[in-house]
Length: 280
Image (cartoon, rainbow, N blue to C red; front, side, top):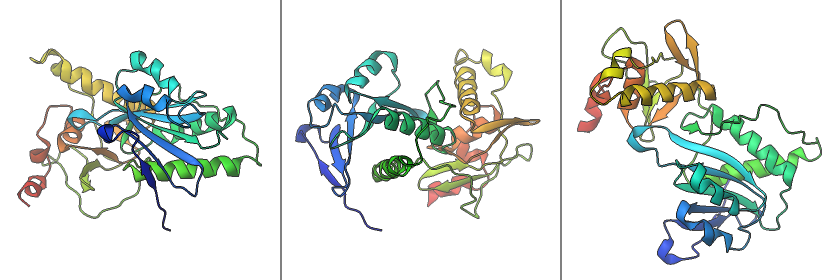
């Protein structure tokens, strides 16, 4: 099925940092803006409507991209409070309707839906601390409309290269495995990402890394990553460590190898044959 998305750049000097886009056959409108352009969005048409939004970081150092899901009854104005209390994010994707037809229950349900979806996303680490375990009570008559909103938001996110899909399926026959047989894991490469396959085994950082010359930064960083994965339900404890229940995508192979071994590794050399990709 084909769709056409129209983009508006309110200020051509800020084309990379502020844009509005929409499938003109649908009432849902999307705003992309960096954290220093909140006030600009507030001045735009529909920029203060009821909204559901996503705050993203830039996923530095090969880590999973962090994301926070929220709702707002006054559009971009809600993001002003996140300037101080949520420092991780660098850009936002906010979704409204032209005629402000979202209501409080609709944005409440959509926030709940996307939090549940992101808990097991293969590419994103969820920053929400309230995981919304109780589903809002949307009537059977309203649910088709709300889910049509969800479907359109998922499409507009994909149009920006953001796929929130859970990923547990085997989507390749070509895996890279660790050179050492002591580790049980499989890695594959897809769309420029290094994907640690569900069912692999990962470890917490080794205890001795607390005393490394980095002052424990490696230990603290990877302990936090494991804790976040557990909280999101992306991994589960097993006898030998932790087992991913979804495929985990990274921007570098070293993130995967560090999680597998609990040590600082060169991921290109950790996996058999992976380094050959750099010679292609």
